[in-house]
Length: 175
Image (cartoon, rainbow, N blue to C red):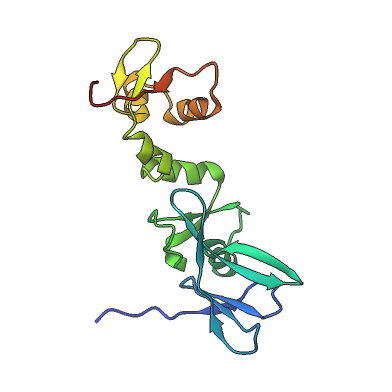
């Protein structure tokens, strides 16, 4: 029989004890006097994060669950600014699935685990290399073939840079 991990609760910073966050990513409110578990909503494009709206000091604050858990339960001695979901599942806000990271560590983790929504979308969109005229199934394939950075070319495409080498094409199965 497996061991069930205890759900620990801590007050959310600056909420004067009105709100609590659990080690499993649940949020309690005592705003009305009664205990109420808040139902999170989803925010963001593509893969979404869970968030709740908290009414603190006369203002509504929309805060993501994973940051609340990390701030309450995970030490951050190096003052890293971002919270990473180790398993890539942004809905798994359990303390064991979260860690503080730098922006570059977060990007590297997402890239190594193919977690970028744009990576998955790009995997299905064909491109053409304007230098060689070669067609590829995706920007990822093109970058791998020519040995160049996918992230750099993705940014160039997004910014419509003059340095853009690969262009998305409508390939109706003829490529």
